[in-house]
Amino acid sequence: MKSHVEREIDELKQMILKMGAVAEERLALALKALVERNVQTAEHIAITDDEVNHLELEIDEKCLSILALHQPEASDLRFIFAAIKINKDLERIGDQAVNIAERTKVLLDYPQLKPLIDIPHMGRLVKDMIRNVLDAFVRGDELMAVRVCERDNEVDALADQLFRELLTYMIDGKGKITPALQLILISRSLEKVGDHATN
Image 1 (spheres, one colour):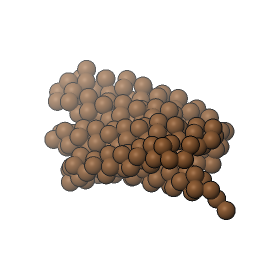
Image 2 (image 1 turned 180 degrees about the vertical axis):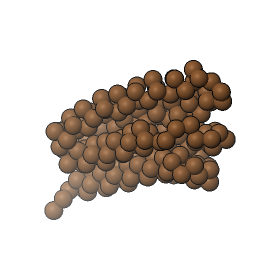
Image 3 (image 1 turned 90 degrees about the vertical axis):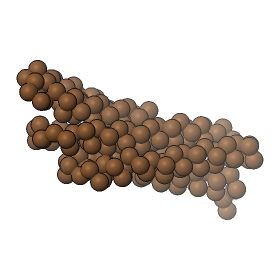
């Protein structure tokens, strides 16, 4: 039989996984809006940030409740404090999805600057990082967590490469500065998502 604390910790794990799934889904939708040039999807993401914020509050309250009512042992205590920090990173990933959606809305006022290859690739990388790191957290898999950290270098390299490429469009001018800048900012948002997964 599991103790009450163990059941509460199991519930907390499920809440973290749900928060991760919501953050990952919002990121996927933001990238879909960008690739498909769909303003309705971009607007939907921008106005429905409340779900992520609500989940963040629920998880914080759950953590504080376990701490206040159950005097958890050292390993459970470490898990709870990790959950509090992970919760904040997941909320920030949701914020980055909103940023991407807002940048997409600006981009849609301009013709497509270039084929979107690097940004969707970065998006797939960071979504995998989120999924893998949450699995590592729940399973206590240190090796998988280390692999996620290593993948962040790949995301950073892609962001730098894209920055250099888009800079050449900006130098060219001729109505390309704003869309190139928006794509740079989107790539920076994805880079930040990778950083949050690494955290």
